[in-house]
Image (cartoon, rainbow, N blue to C red; front, side, top):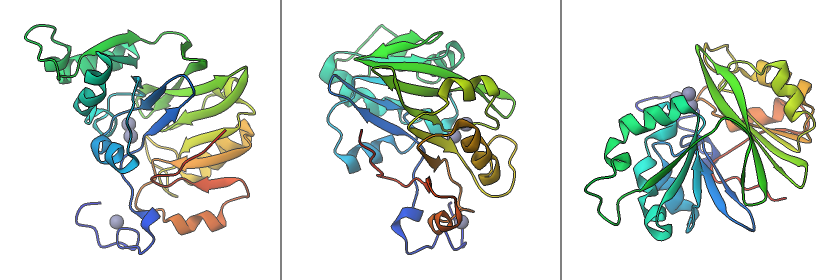
Length: 240
Ligand SMILES: [Zn+2]
Ligand SMILES: [Zn+2]
Ligand SMILES: [Zn+2]
């Protein structure tokens, strides 16, 4: 956090230095990113990302969309950039990034979005992507379940204040559950550690990773979490 003197902001553990929440998924057929936050460019450079075939958005808060224009590098390489989002999120993207969605006066290396409104499960390559509507304070946002060959591999709920029973049913038994856990104390728009643990106990995944972590929660707090529950960190890679 800017201008903060707390222990986590000054921690010697590099895993306590966190950029905005996002995931990049590589499959044999194609690769995509979930959200392009303010740090997208830094993250793409750090990880040496050469290919993005699509972008899938959870919601339009600034920490999830403000790196959108940096997709131009990948959009130019493939001719356009498929953008998957709810109708509400797409409307926000079209307003904020009007210059990109505006079809006139287009320079070749500009970002050329190809909007796809999500209202049902869809496929990218052989991966089935199921939208998971969850409350995020006063609004509803999308999380996603990624399945391949009828196997529930990853459920990603980066921003939520509750996990409704219907969503628990959809993702029950998933291999990896990535769940919002901002801090120990309750927050109006994000899950606390206790609430995230409760969600994990209902979902019963093989393993759980906390994400969207605030500076109140050090990486070292992982040692007091139950077995199978981890605090994710920037650059973490999971392979299936
Ligand atoms: Zn701090
Ligand atoms: Zn948010
Ligand atoms: Zn967020």
